[in-house]
Image 1 (cartoon, rainbow, N blue to C red):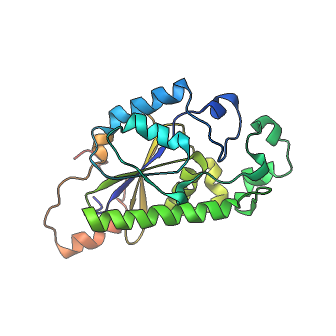
Image 2: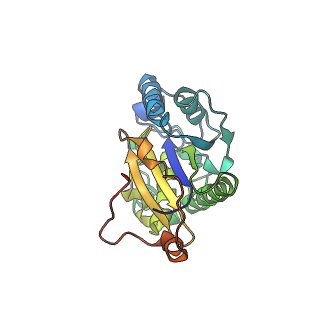
Length: 237
């Protein structure tokens, strides 16, 4: 198994805007009752994982999620994980936005999307990927390759990070799903990232904790960035 730190991407729980079919963007929307229950439930699963670091988007829905899921944690705010700035689209119903000329561009060619009065989707992706890669290198340096750390962020941000990990163009990121309170796991290696788990809303997270290190030959260490041909044995070991 790859000897690098493991990143857990946690999307915030459901919000009042999610429930109403609106685009929250950077507005201070909060979790609804379902979202609070989702946060508590994912917290039960995360108890099996020793987290070396917890970072979060500065928006209240992410901070509320972590307060419920990991009440003993002291999350560090990372501005690079903030939601995309949707400009004048923020606060509007998605059904209304679907009639805008920009909507099909967002769906089919998001790398060219620039929200009116807001942020380019490509810029959002670049700063989010830079943030998690920087944090991953820092966690690995400080806590070792067996460390697991968590970043709480937003749907489009997580999808952009996953697209980068998969090596696919941002124009394909709308094919990726990140549900509220879902966990996605990524391991970055010197040659390529590995997407270990995607949009997990109910699995056993303890299996994502790497085993204790073993003394290995140099050739085995060099193979850390190699994919398992045929799929490998999975996380159980």
